[in-house]
Image 1 (cartoon, rainbow, N blue to C red):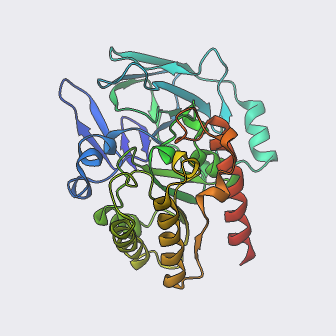
Image 2 (cartoon, rainbow, N blue to C red; image 1 turned 135 degrees about the vertical axis):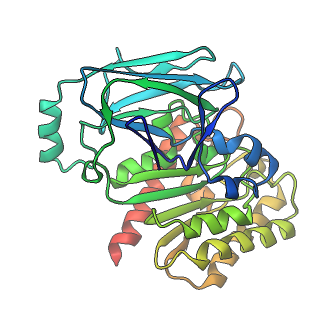
Length: 341
């Protein structure tokens, strides 16, 4: 996490000066980023999936100034505003972020009733915490902030964290809104915070990232989604070798933390009867079994996404309903396993 101008930049490991002004938001440290594959290194590390700007307001108004980097017109550029776990009214959220400067102005909300509900229902986010949840799909540049802002206190935030690694599906592709990704929904369902380390089209199980995930001490349990970004490039043998090395790297320093592993969610390769996808799934299941670690749990992607009705029209990404289905199924499995001990 980074703190700048009274704002906590959640899920950001570095603020990087951006050509033309402002700061890009890097989700991994620079020494790790330089060891990643080209797409992850050059671009995806600064995609803002799971990135939030969090602050308390001491002034009546706050103004956050953002812009997005050059992006496809069909990319998702909507930010969401929350007061703790409460979505702001439709007059406030969502907010589209353009390539020109975008000002998000927030008036200090009246949260007395929300605060009472927060205490009564033991919610994990204090509604005093303003959360600007950035789009998952592109690079968003932080330009400036105005107002008397201070960082939230630790007790105003969830006390446990879930780290998610994977492809654009983990990123939130086709989830429609940033809070609709399966990873974000799992965090919400389990009452924890999210560290999203998804890498759209570049989840190549880079060894440096595996070591980095294991060495981080800021997560309590994690999930790994592996395979979809390489099935068109790697044989099953190459995949198994890379995947086993990545898993071993994560396990090396994960200590006694829970790790939930899956392969490819239901997709076009299943519908086309591609033999390689069966080999990929067998490889992941076998690798987890060979580890013999009671806190590393394998679940086939087809158990988490079960129906073609849960796919978007590209037959690769889950639809918004599919993202929710994954979240409901996987969060139940996680809860059952964790609470059983």
